[in-house]
Length: 127
Image (tube, rainbow, N blue to C red):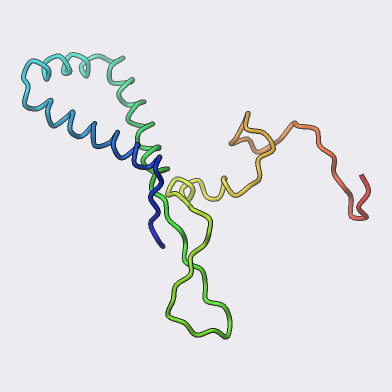
């Protein structure tokens, strides 16, 4: 496994770093801490925070990319490791190959059935 850093990943990492700095600074300022305590004491505030934190967590999992190591070709002895061209994220691993399928439409990316009309061929190659 070889880690890969994309420019969009850097933006997510900066967002997470900004959240960490925000909560660290929040501890030092009593006035802001009191204001945010009011937000977190309300049901709506906690639900909103949980939803946002869930989105940030999924974005963080989707921004950790790597390339898988390929098996060595038969009959070739080498110490060099070859990696796959496809970049995979940890979110792709958790969703177990949902991203491996070809998508004909992006209106329902996690749909198991497609209602789009398409031409199909039988075993003899006829439409």
